[in-house]
Image (cartoon, rainbow, N blue to C red; front, top):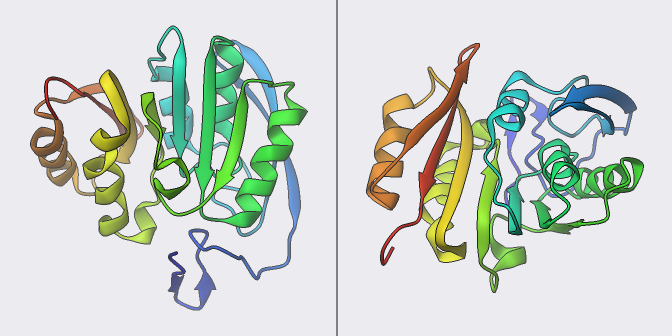
Length: 209
């Protein structure tokens, strides 16, 4: 498990946040419907749906049916919306942060979603025996590039043939590095969307990867 501290402030990519929990209710209009999310201190973007997450939610291409993984789900906005807009999917949401996991579980119920669940653990460990039709992630860049690279390079082991991975990144942070990672890992990549300094990158598992 990773526990990072920067400039004396507890990092949200930690197993057990020690900051005092301060809840905040977020109202958001996403993919043509209204959602509510409980967020908190100790979890990424507690005050609002951050621009990168919004861009991924707006542009994500979901399979018609199958399994979807929300990697590093935080309080669950991406996974909850994916499950809500397509009831033929089953969404598994994963995060190392136990406070985020608790909030994501609460937000599943708050939004009336029945085709999703949350698991706690580091990266792909909680889903190590599963294959997905789609992986979605707003990765914890501040946790370090090693963590983000692992999300990309280890992904093929957990993807069905034809599955996609869709990740939002800041355009100014490692733009070429991400492009090269996708090319080296999958042999392909597409920019699904770009806005406000963010990009959504997508790659597809093809052949014998």
